[in-house]
Length: 105
Image 1 (cartoon, rainbow, N blue to C red):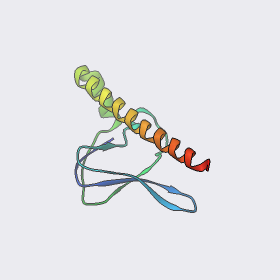
Image 2 (tube, helix red, strand yellow):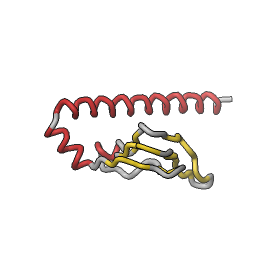
Image 3 (tube, helix red, strand yellow):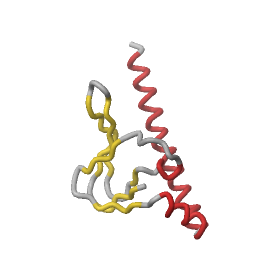
Image 4 (cartoon, rainbow, N blue to C red):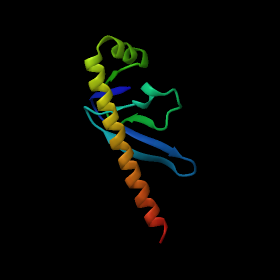
């Protein structure tokens, strides 16, 4: 998982036959790669630095140590990640609804 301390990171994916689709531009204070903390699946998107960046890296092993060592901080971090993932899922659902509504006409 990465926390952006300085700079901008573009989150995108490659669509076969179309090229890159930019999904978001993240600024300082945002994080990405949080799904890797919870599963071992392949990346679903690419993260590309738009500018020079300073990132804080949190490895899965370090996160697991945090869970064992400091339950109060772990609780706050977990809830923050749950809220982040929920917000991103809502945006994805809204985008999918809009796409489906447009494709019906």
